Length: 372
Image (cartoon, rainbow, N blue to C red; front, side, top):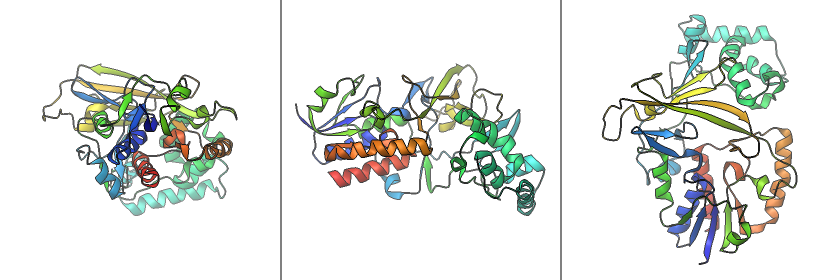
């Protein structure tokens, strides 16, 4: 059988493009090297809890078109992301807001908090930040940097903050209010029943082949379709002929606990350098500790998240968009352009660019409108 489109990757980008192609009467084959659909937003049911297997995902957007689109395929709950920072047992609100400043300095008014931040900025005397450490201190002062930025960032990137480029932290949100909502988004929530169910509905009508490595069977798979939508790593598509791009990877330790409540919040970030994990996710709180019928769940599932340098065989999660890698990516994109309209490179890995979920959906919809 011939297909109009071969889509490589059953993650969010591939699934949205597949949905649009099927709805426009195209024949679509989706191949996925993992044994499941949904990519990194994959969720599976454990003890009645929808576990975010590859890390917690909260859908948030200001794009009404995107929000209305995903709501065609799932009902979203009213979950609001309000993470907590744990620094050696001291708990702070994230993002940085009046609760944070009260806990840090004992201040009770926005004017007091602003004055303390300004004092620490002036004391630092940094006019032209040369690295991430200086950039952060120049934005929020030394206290917040030392307790809530330094350790967490060094664990994320695997190197000291004074060796990281300043552009990684262009800004740090400082709220002189008691607003605990981490995202400045009009729309926010988690799909009831999990992301896997959402992606399965997006893929309805397309043929899906799991456990299928496109790069290992490229010739025979390419022969089946007129066009390819590729969402894997762009450098892998070209056999790393120009060199390997850098990525950060993640590792998870997940366990079921025989208790109803472990930490009382969906996400707690561990911002000290000594704690080896970056955060702990307690999955049941993405859906308020209840199943779809509204019943309280007697057990809980937690995941400790560790950041790691990517190496072959690991899952690439985040592109390292520093000067060296962006320059190398530009050369790969020139090779991609030479492929012409036969191959579309999409998603976080295909474009080597960090995207939030709503941006992935928007990019896929825009590509579908342009090509279909």
